[in-house]
Length: 267
Length: 267
Image 1: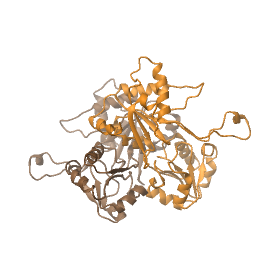
Image 2: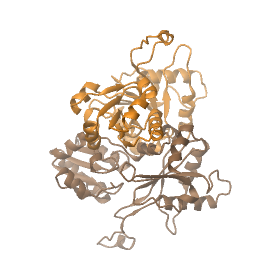
Image 3: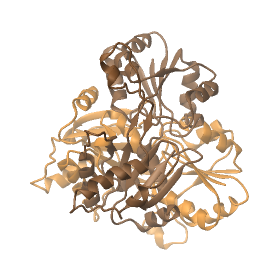
Image 4: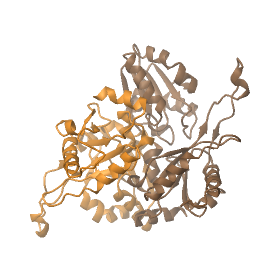
């Protein structure tokens, strides 16, 4: 059996009782380590489970997963995923591949930022489509996500912005070499995301969103030291919400009174 | 301390390890029993936790919550909520009330249908705003949710439709009497939801959605006997997906190839 197990968002104890039971009985346990991270490191998980964990980076998940799936035909293998296991396309792809190889699968759901974002008081049914904000480079500054935010805003819907993370990304120089070298991990902060948004707004005179528009920054949702800040985009571009992971919400123009009351806690 | 603890969607073991630890140490444990239900009854939960649970219906949650919040100033009270605790407005409202009463609160997140719906293979970031489909009566047939579905469809986004549930609703006759009488619980099935949608489509000649449009029915997501069916709306109006809870998705017109491959398992 191949298990995909969600770990939730905070620490080791955010796994479900069912998930923990499976982890304890499995023959091999992998931790998917490139689409998201937990606030605690994998050694804390190893201690909590009382067993070793194999770190599964992008290369392993995309190129070598077949080996593990083949193993899962005759033994129990678990892949742990931060948040909910089906948040990223990679994992649906794995499940399809498992089906082709006639490997049985089971999914153990958990919370993800897609529903836990409601901790800021904005109601989930008032969210439009979710967008991802990628790190800009000197030569690559895509802004198509901004039109989706504007689209939601014009329909009076909130937008959850997932912020880019770069884990074990090969350096450009090493791409053509035999030995890969990797960049240090990078996690976009609400500060960086707000700055990129302000960069786009500056070039769009007619934008409904301005530097004074409300933004809600969230960091380490589900952890003990979770932070939420409801301030203007301009203020957000100077706001330090501490260690990763961060998420940003652009709220709708007209909020429900209950949403206003709730957000007022974070001004 | 007042704890709001998500139970997830399947059975007793879908609570998180952190959630279970809190339940075991609390002085009193309530189970919110009117916005959603677990596939197992509350007695199974009582056995699993090894302690009694107070059932909290709408009346208790909306009118008598202050008493419990007052108690939570000097003892530990947990309110268990199926899915994620912040899925329903009621619970944000409670947290605000707790703040007014200077009661400390903690939220233990869990999966909800808002992210677990991804088990059908449709990608979460391709969902537009979520809608609720209410039970129609002889004299009350609202259809504003249909325009939201059409709106998402026109922007090539999926729509998650949450289906109505009626638990401990007073009968109309007893509303004016001293002793309330209650109707038996009712949970909308995908069959009923699809029939209501077909009723609307019949009156809208120019609708982009027709009886041949694709619909995805889900039942008991997260439970061992979870069912998913990807068929036309017309077929869905005759489809029995078994016991509650059910959810319905109206997918976007153009799906990602991976979404198509995944949904093909459920045709």
